[in-house]
Length: 496
Image 1: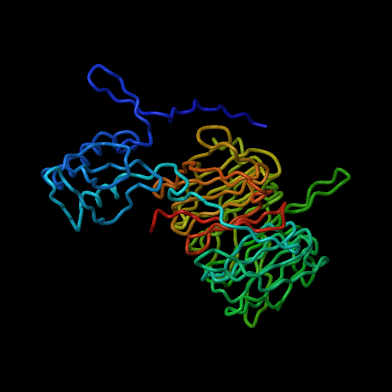
Image 2 (image 1 turned 90 degrees about the vertical axis):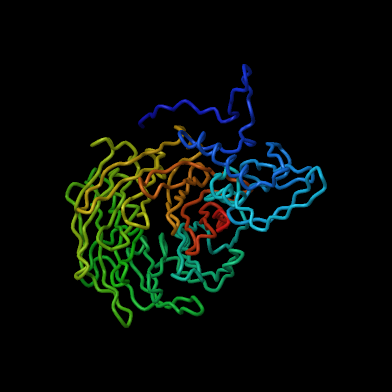
């Protein structure tokens, strides 16, 4: 196991300023602004200039710890960062009574609007990207639940439970996030090992994989009711199909015409070499048939124990992560034939990469310029990685964060990983730490900043295996493998 040097923690308890010859420590929560680096001084000056310009002539400005707004003593109160009294973006109405008894009622207080746009949120629980627990849904037929998927409109949620061979569909309330069960499909033989169930981008079909029966299943989906009807199945070494030794995950082409299955390969006893994994392609054809295309394997075992697979939004690239091989591999895809070919491989401890030992989940950013990875579910690095994808398909490491270094603490056993549709946040299920790590994302550089690690309370995160952000961005759903449930979290979006 690699060791990673822990950086010196930053002092976030107070911010100091000079007043005359005294050095006064003011609580961080009651400063006008708390921006990093060069933004802090000009923003303070700018805010006070705006207030001086727009305030009534007999209403002095004063910093206080009172509730935000114009007071009856003719003072404008600057709010603390975060919490219920913070100013939110938008125009607000305020009333002030000055010392001479006159009442001022500016209907469009531009200064307040300006402050609301410029002063950032603090790391309060209601800051953008943070998660707040809402409720959980528990069912016996979700024991060992380990995937979260939505239909394109976000009307329905789907999950699979690998240990008991069970698939479930739920109707989703878009206002509250609540789930209502609509269907269960169970088969403890054929569906045993069903690690993933997902819906095609056009919403017409759904696919499930099961490693116990070495199969991929195709279901026709009823859009109005969300229910699934099996229409086809392909099995390893039947009718010329290969590349389904141990199917664990899959992804669809953006046009819904192809499905790409991650085959983890099989470990054999008696000192025999491992049977290598592959990326296996099928075409989805009307009226509901799967057609085997290709199993792309690698002689250097770079797909051993493949666990994560994702496709770029334009469909040109496929990224896969493999736990035993400790690799991130990029494949190029032919949109017409559906065939793939390996473009590049990154391996842990090579070329400056240090966070791919035990690589598990992966996903693309909404613009396709970055790949995000997590690791540690079956040992290795407890890391989250950021990799840039160039136009010609070259990967380059941008950032790697490890548990216990910097701001990321309390995350271990990375399994599922998801990026919100607006591209602002990345979420990772830490299965061993029983937590969800939340990150703020810089859309330009792709880099991440840890903003919250949600801990396990009352078993709401008892071994989280996968998670997904609802298409509208309002909720995050977490599959709880250790508690046969799905936990629902509201995602704060900054009042948008």
